[in-house]
Image 1 (cartoon, rainbow, N blue to C red):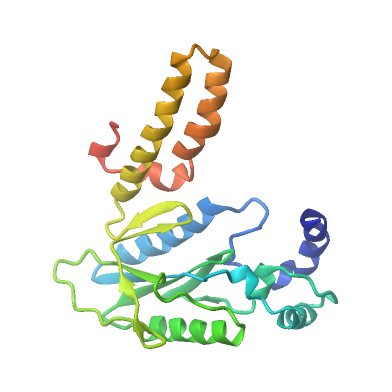
Image 2: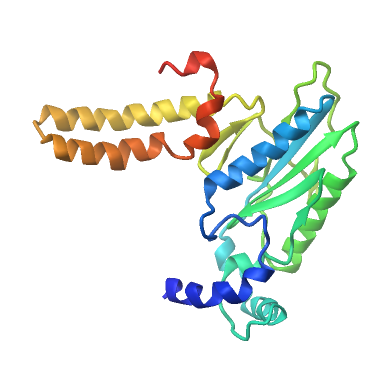
Length: 251
């Protein structure tokens, strides 16, 4: 039913969708979302004397808090006379993308990326505040304890950054964050992701070895490897495979 509805609805609402909503789009996926975030980050850091602050928001039970009446109003605004429960449309009216700051989404995984230069954080902080207020207006409850911020700053003398507040609570600054299944770190060297992937692959290879010890045929072993091992190993590899540190490529 969801696929049937999506096939009819997508052509009618394509013009109103947020261009930085990467979920449920044709020929777009996790790789595109992560690549876009990293491209904006690296492009800004290459200019020197700058930093990037990334706010990763967490919503508890987000799909259960959608208000049907508000969604109906949003559908009418884009010219669709139907009350359909579609989260990407529910959030499409809040979008933001400038040279120094943008908000990107992958379904309910939302991140604000602020490219900071000369300590100018006003736009970044204002966008965070506006998004928090928009969430309240649309009955989307933020989990402030799981909302995290990661700061990427390669300068030798790093200035003290003032914390960001959400509802009076300081957002925790972390060195690594699991975003869309990949472990991003503030060094952008993918060491955290590689360590997590190594541990996960070792546990899965154990079962492959056990199957081989039971003299399972090679066809089934290959099928198990492709579905259980390789699917994890090559997940979003285009984002991290070429940027691993040299000493990590041997494992």
